[in-house]
Structures are given as structure tokens and as C-alpha cells.
Image (cartoon, rainbow, N blue to C red; front, side):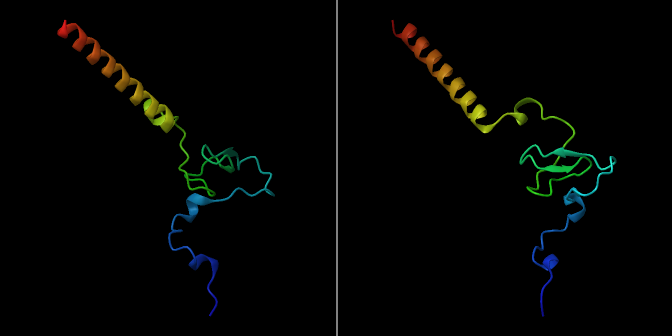
Length: 96
């Protein structure tokens, strides 16, 4: 017995969240936007990108949530270097 494509992915329970935009549909009510992660076009009212599964949000991330990992790690290294510098300076002053 042949299996259908729907049976191949048991995790595909959120199919309504993963609708693909129809290129043939020129209706203006079906506006699309670029996915912030992969850049492909998805419906504006979609909760998740149909291609990469990234959750689409109207709100921009604030604070450190929107920063890339390299920025966060660089900030941690900078703070640690500053602390080590202050501790070394205080140790020199105390040892005099």
C-alpha cells in the first residue's frame, strides 16, 4: 500500500500555520512579507514560516534578544577583560 506525503512527516500538525503563498494569486488581500530568518515570502498573517519554521512576530525583539550571538559573547569578553584590569590595578595599589 502506498503512503501519502501527509504520512511522511508526523510532526506536521501545524499545517495551517505553514501556508505557502500562492504565486498565481494576485489578490491584494493576500499580502506577503519576507521571513526574518530565511528571507522567503510568507503570508503576513502566518504565524510561522512555511520554509524554515521560524515564528513570525509583529514586534521587533528588544534588548539583548535581538542581538546576534557573536555580539553577546563579545560583550561578555569585554566585561571580563574590564573586571580583570580593575582587579589587577587594585592589586598593584594594595601591594605598594
